[in-house]
Image: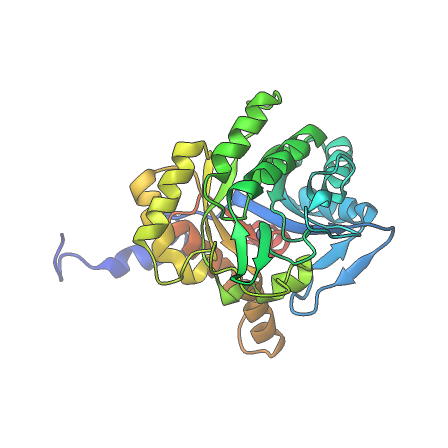
Length: 330
Ligand SMILES: [Zn+2]
């Protein structure tokens, strides 16, 4: 370590060119994934109350939105579906002509170079809004783990069948990555990667998303399957399990309040690691910017850079399309 006055860190901060030369972390458009919400109909662009700039889109509008983002430089989208009907078996999740399956076919046909990743979960398709099969009796409500695995595996395989480039299970059931990997392999999709929501916390930062995906649980909460925000060592065990079960990319969600988890996951496992900058992270920046309290562009790019610095290889963000535009302007 150098010492003052021989070592003066400010020497390398004197000009933009010098600062860029020694910059340790880069944020590139190639690392960003845009989440999109698709529902039935035509010419539907239903705004989401607490997520300015985010919409529920019918397939035709989804294609438009995805094409715009792709042309701007966003390489990948993550699809969430809102079905017309919900039931107790989440049958819309794995229907061959379900809303996500239709959307994947359309996007892959019209934009073959766009990477299409699908969220694999049951909550949007269940009448009760939970991510798994529910048993309700005098003892209370229980989210059943193993019966849920089959449905998740079927869902993932049907997305692959429709042409998805990657599947992303977000349910947090134990053993789901293995169940999905086996199903994909048995159905001929050995080359379809799995991006596992490996350390997904039961977070209040998901509030605005639940309106977007219409997936608010009708009773109870998700704390019996999503992780306790207090736990970091457990997050590492969750990630280890998903890697053992066949995850190709592991994700930490949310992002900004969980940078310590992101850092540990990347440092310990060295696996491709994703961060999901969730709905309330987006909403807080948008709301403060709308009040003129912060610079939206600067705060967004600094937040994304911080996720990269903490260890994220790729970032799922509602600001992906704006960010690629801003990165191009720099
Ligand atoms: Zn879910």
